[in-house]
Image 1 (cartoon, rainbow, N blue to C red):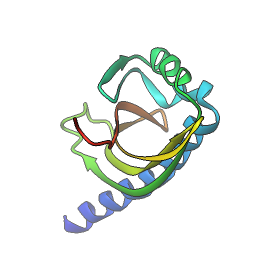
Image 2 (image 1 turned 60 degrees about the horizontal axis):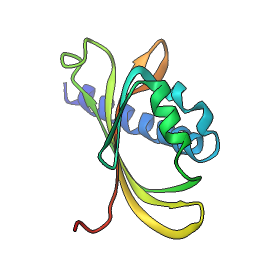
Image 3 (image 1 turned 90 degrees about the vertical axis):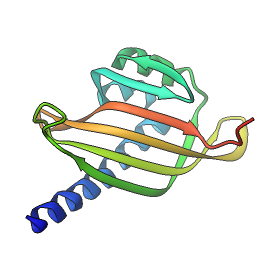
Image 4 (image 1 turned 180 degrees about the horizontal axis):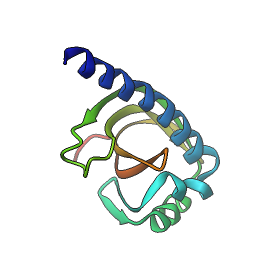
Length: 136
């Protein structure tokens, strides 16, 4: 049993590495294709702004200034299949720095994804992005 759990965690971490490489490359370079990363019913909460549905998420992301994300830390864990309709799902925590067009200041960010395996592809069910700026 412990071997199975360790293997599941290893798989989650490997998937998180592959997935986040694709995700941040897409958001930084091919944002017009970002709806393909989300479930049709996907949810994005971006700095407190909630957006539902892959097409609306893509439109929201397209309206943001061009970005460059640099990932610094990454963690992942499997989600019990009992909780997610027997679909393989992972929780991913990502942290790093992001800079936006016309602002060279790097800002720390934290992002949490729930991804689900759908027809052999990973889709984002839930995405919560937050700039880590001082609370006022």
